[in-house]
Image 1 (tube, rainbow, N blue to C red):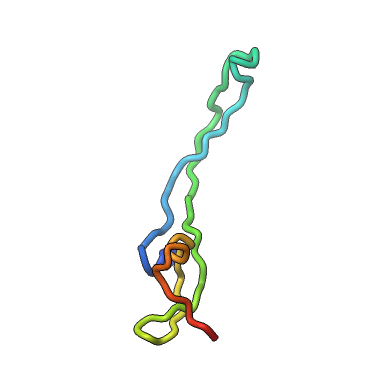
Image 2 (tube, rainbow, N blue to C red):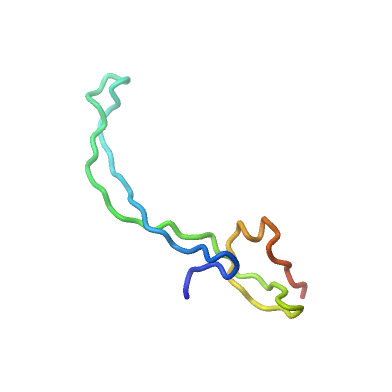
Length: 77
């Protein structure tokens, strides 16, 4: 499956992008209005790394959080 971390399963989640206009009330305006709402994708920060799996190097797609947390051991060339 595309865009999914091979370790934790983190993938793409859906969200919304809100477009606003106007001047804030505390700055002397009449307030901020919402002019549109569109859908967007929050994509995981995936990196392609060579990791050791059962003692053998394997190329994997791993999210940056799993790399930082030390859930994989990188294979040296």
